[in-house]
Length: 80
Image: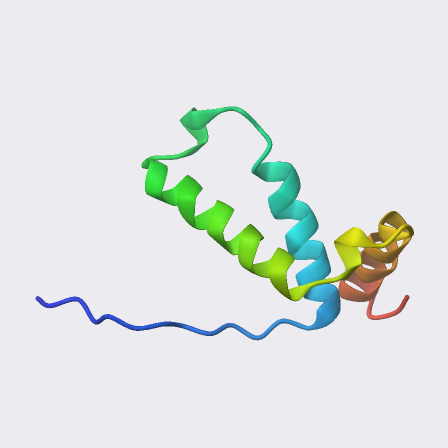
């Protein structure tokens, strides 16, 4: 069976992207390779984190932790 080659796009709200980026940045810092069945899995998570970082300005703002808090509230509860 041939594997299709291409790209997949996933749309996230700004708040979802912030929450996901925060999760990935913490997860990717954990030094435990046993979490992965194959190192390709780790590579994909690093790559997604990098792609999000390139698209976002929030991680570089002084009030980033407050931004994360509001984004989590909105994603979890539907409000800030």
